[in-house]
Amino acid sequence: QVQLVESGGGVVQPGGSLRLSCEASGFTFSRNGIHWVRQAPGKGLEWVAFIRYDGNAKYSGDSVKGRFTISRDNSKSTVYLQMSSLRAEDTALYYCAKDRAYSVEVWGRGSTVTVSS
Amino acid sequence: QTVVTQEPSFSVSPGGTVTFTCGLSSGSVSTSNYPSWYQQTPGQAPRTLIYTTNVRSSGVPDRFSGSIFGSKAALTITGAQADDESDYYCALYMGNDIWVFGGGTKLTVL
Image 1 (cartoon, rainbow over the protein chains, first blue to last red):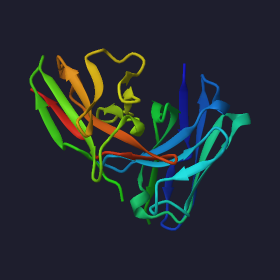
Image 2 (image 1 turned 90 degrees about the vertical axis):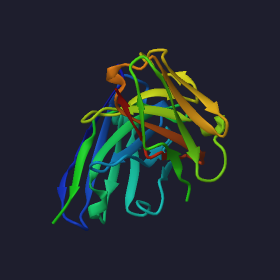
Image 3 (image 1 turned 180 degrees about the vertical axis):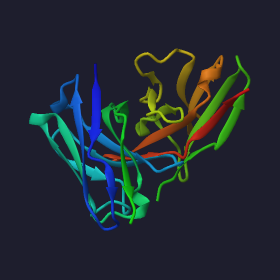
Image 4 (image 1 turned 60 degrees about the vertical axis):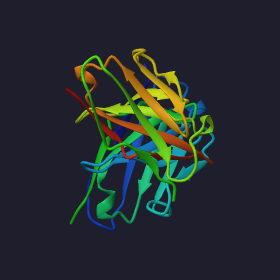
């Protein structure tokens, strides 16, 4: 079945960097777009970034643009989220998710990022 | 900046029917926004209920239905059950590979 497994989360100091990975299985990875969605503690879902099957990428806006980079390696069925210049407000559970018909279809279980000194 | 609006909370009696809405701070929601709906219980990852306005995701019971209701997207639960008590989020496709989630609706079944 379709499965997405996030990894790479942890505790990082403000201004630091972290790279999240999302390993996919159970579908033709190279033909599907992948989202990153985050959820701050006690808050709602926030769409962060999307990468098309061909590597074209988009980001949610000023809050992450220029600091986050989404990429993919189709040979490894893996999507990455490189995060730099991290701020306290980036603290969240980060989900990767498979796209279907302009929506999120299947979610991973998430990886926790904590930005704290 | 586009804001997607949802009711903060709703309550429904067991067996009852409830309809949540998902709107835009400016303009109307249409099928071109590919409205989708997600259910999340505390401590769990979200679960996709509806995508592309009204298509149920695999395994979702038919008492969950999606539609466009006036200028908004809508999620209706018919015959609410105790385990429907969750947070419900909608998401809208804004074009150009950009999505926005609503703030979520907390459903209480009592």
